[in-house]
Length: 212
Image (cartoon, rainbow, N blue to C red; front, side, top):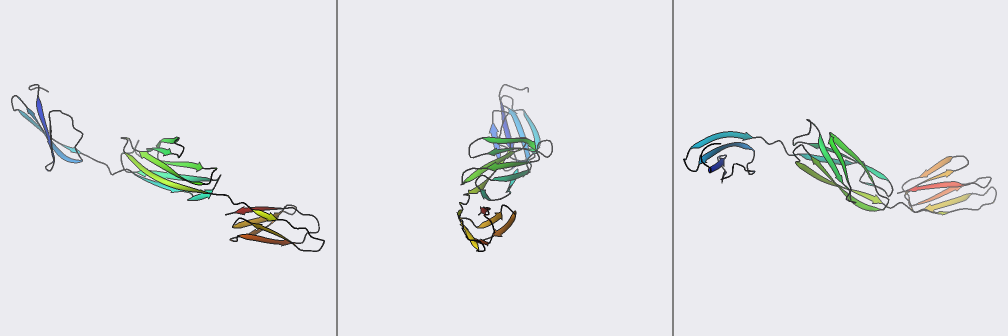
């Protein structure tokens, strides 16, 4: 205030200098600065020194419960931010950008957890943003691979009494066959096909579950 209608402003940190006829600038970095205001008419000057503090950059960590899941299944994405200028001491605003462009917001939280899924077998990429109280932003992406569910082909068996029946199945990597009457299960793991033998005394139904 005071002086003539025109003042010249200079900001310097010893290495970089900015000059302007406006009292406002957005070009200053963190560190020690001095400012000089010179009245254009009288040449009178005012000098000040000040420090601009800058917190560490905001960072964001993402972790998925699994990198892949069968189509129709779900994956949990956990996120946690640090650095920057947290909200209320420890919190941040989290925004999950989904492939369908519908964001999911979790404001003012220490961390954020999201559950994502897809009924279609595909690879989907999710983008998560974390913002501090000054809207400084960290961005991370994570891709979840939704894999096709196996299609099982089963061959039933017809036998005479006291004969042994063989039930075969293909299309998965792991199989569980269960005698529906007795509820007894047998597992076949890490095999592209299953050959199960049994010798029931009566007509018997079995259920088969296959997984990749």
